[in-house]
Length: 391
Ligand SMILES: Cc1ncc(COP(=O)(O)O)c(C=O)c1O
Image 1 (spheres, rainbow, N blue to C red):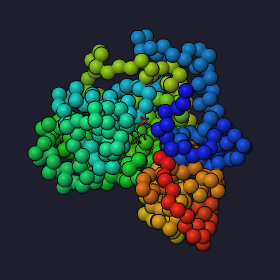
Image 2 (image 1 turned 180 degrees about the horizontal axis):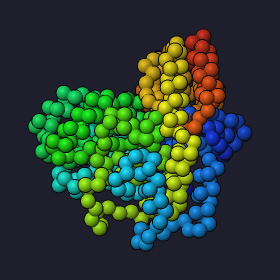
Image 3 (image 1 turned 120 degrees about the vertical axis):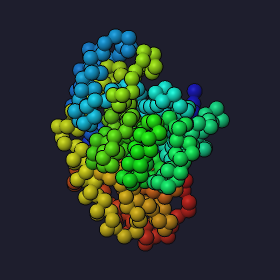
C-alpha cells in the first residue's frame, strides 16, 4: 500500500527531539523554529509532559464521554486559571478544524442564523464548514461550497460596517484570527477587533476567535485577542494545546447554553489527551512561558528589523513573519538544508517563525547569526532556479 501523496515533503526523517532541537536518522541536529507548524509550545518531549502522559497511560488511556472523566474538569480548572476566562465552558475535540467546525455550528444553533463572516487570507481548517470559511478555493471541494459564508477584506473597518448595515440580521458569527498564521502573519488591528465585537453585540451575532495557531501563549498573551481588550464569545484552540498530542477545544461564553446531544465526539476529551493538555498548562504556568514568549519575541523582532535583506518584519510574541525578497527567495530551503534550521513559510514569500515558547536566548542568537550568514552567502552567489515552496 502507498501513502496518499498529499504532502510535498522535505527529504528528512526526524527520529529524536528535545526542547528546541530535533535530530534526523543520521544524527544531524536541527534547530526548530517551526515546531511542526506551531504545535510545539513547551518544547519537544518536555519531561513533565512525558511523565504525565506515561502516568495516565498506565492508569487508563481512553474511555468515551459516557462516563465521568475527572481529568477533563482538572484541565478546565487549569485553563480557566491560566487563560483568565474563568466563566467560560470547555468542549474538547481533537484538532483545530474540528474546534472551528463546532464553534461555527454552535453559533448557528445559538443564534438560529446561517451567515458566517470570514476574512481574506483566513485559514480555519479542512473540514466542511471550516474549509468553506477558509480563503483558499483550491482546498474547497464542490461539496463544501456553501452560500452561507461571506468573505470580507481583513482589517477593513469600512467594508465590515457596510456589510453589517445590510446583512447584520442574518449573521450567526464572525470568525477571525487575531494574527493570521497560514495567511502570512497578518496582525489584526485592535480597532478592527473591537469593531467586530461591537457589531456582533448590536446584531446578535457571535464573535469566534480562531486561536488555533495564535493562541495558547504564543502571542505573549494567552489569547492574541486579549491585546484588543475584548472577549470573544467562542475561542477555538488546538496546536500548542497538547504540545504534539492531538487535542483541541473550544471555550464557550457562559450565556451560550448547552443541550444534550448538541455537540459530541468519540475521542475528544479522552484521558490521555487531557493529561497531555494539563501538563502543557502546568509547564506554561511554572516556566512563565507567556511572559517569556513576549520578551523573546520582542527581542527577536527587534533584531530581525535590523537585518539587511529581509522586509516587513511583523508579529507578536513568538509568532513572527518577514518577507523574503526575490534575490534570496530560497532562504528557507538554505536555512534547512545547509544550516539545519527549521522555519515555517507562508506563500508566496513569507518566512514564519513559530518556535517553542521556551526557546532560549542562546538559541535565538544562534538563529540570528545563522540567518545573517545565510543571507550574506546568498547575496554573494547567483540565485538558483525557482524551487517550489513546501507548506
Ligand atoms: C488558524 C488555524 N485554524 C485552524 C487550523 C486547522 O487546524 P488542524 O490542522 O488541527 O485541523 C489551522 C492549521 O494550521 C490554523 O492555523
